Image 1: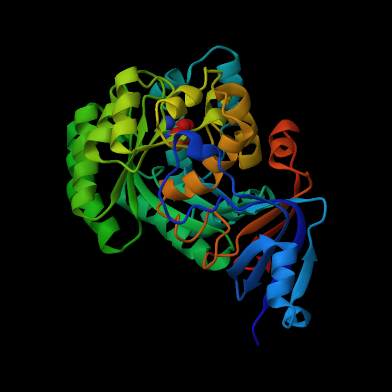
Image 2: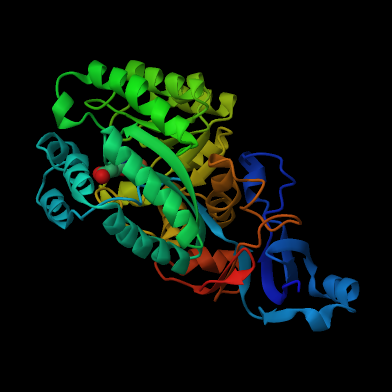
Length: 418
Ligand code: NIG
Ligand code: FE
């Protein structure tokens, strides 16, 4: 028997309908496809119709008795949020570093002293696959509770083949065990592991010749990411990593210009990266180059706040024609949060996105940043029924009442999961 669900009478339905046109920029970032007294008709987890309740009543009157009706009166209804950039699979935690940074240490000081990414790498290498599954599962539950139904996840706390594969396999297993769709990225180039200290180029060779082929061979990742940053990987080394990934069919992503302006945005445009992340210190030329190449800016305002840095120039990027997505960057060091609603709030407050742009950045554009815009990110016929009902009456209120979880219920492929 077909399972039919009818969500009806939404105070406001933000469809984000995009007809597969690709990432939105400029004014298109404000087009939410709003419907008052909105309805969504779902059959077997797939959206079959979207419109006003009146329209759907007319069209489906003879099947209405078969449907489970969900009353969305007084509620905002949106697509499930998409988080296009996380480091969600990791062992342990780093609360002591949080204190150290408040006492004056910088992120890079801590990392160079063997903490930061290196500390999590130690803990992730030590953790069993089972332990990582349990810890990651808890974080995914929290994502779901905050209305997030698709999450990109990176390896990068192994930096040796064994642990990188362990992280990626954990994601593959979680795909089967958790309702969230996990999209895997290989990030072996997250830092230079201590065994390769002072031999950065050798590590890059090792990654290209010994890690990438195995990861790609086992089809464990779709994307390939690199931390292009002064003191980590140079733009030249980053380019080698990303070009090598392309030869194995992995789509480039890049942590760019997070701590210092380093040519990362320019490199993203040059290698045809699908997105460039962070961009706190992106140069004007870099922003222009990204607008021209259609590289999506994946901005992480919670990370900027947590590192007590000025957020990326989101407003300026949109005005310059860059398509912007936003993300939690969920990781144990610079952004231990799973709250995309908070990230939307911060996108407005610290990057001056409008409430409408922030919602686009967390749904449709976020889906584009991980190549999932055909399946998720908007409420359109034929797409997965990934839907959130929020206890607010419109999208402005969602951004205005900040720092609070307004989720009423979450539907993943037509099944209620929260
Ligand atoms: O995106 N910048 C590099 N990587 C992560 C942080 C990882 C960590 O501190 O563990 C980021 O902020
Ligand atoms: Fe990151």
